[in-house]
Length: 123
Image (tube, rainbow, N blue to C red; front, side, top):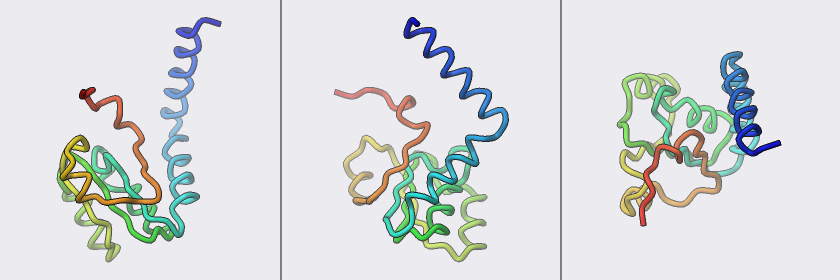
């Protein structure tokens, strides 16, 4: 089977899963599985989910949780952090900037789902 056919099949299977809502459940299960006892960094944590995976990592027992996004803290994120009494930390900035990476710090697990294809290549 040609690679383009395989890619087409994979993309369409993913679209069907997203339409059924399975991906949201699966990604949360993955976060819960890997977060406990580890520090957690979510790159691209705000867009359309308002830090949800950060909160799930914290709830699952992550030792520290940081989110990084070019989008600042949304009102929905701030309200949820307050409601939970959460200590999730957010660093606003471009992941290509060394100062942003330094501010985020080192973490045991880095979640970066749905971000890299938006990032321009830099030499």
